[in-house]
Amino acid sequence: MNTDGHRKKANEIKCSLDKLLPDKEGKHVASIVELTYGLLQHLIAYGMEKKYGRHLNTHVGLCRELRGLGEDRIAEIF
Image 1 (spheres, one colour):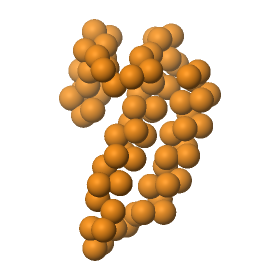
Image 2: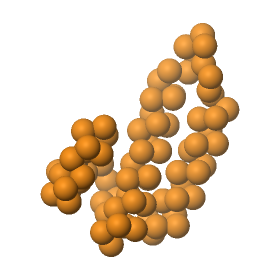
Image 3: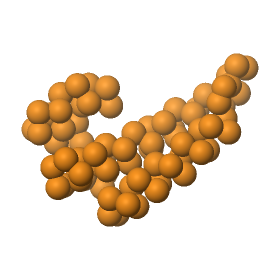
């Protein structure tokens, strides 16, 4: 997926999250967690492409890649 694809997908996921939040009764916790994880993957991929000219299209090895680029804080959060 290219940079624009990651940005567009992140925006789509954010729109879905906006429909589920706030979730005061906790009915959608699992969906919110899954959507948030996917949103973060796309935002990280977008940022890595913009800043470093590369990214992974998978979460496998993502934290290791981020640490290798000196992005320890983002790796910890993810």
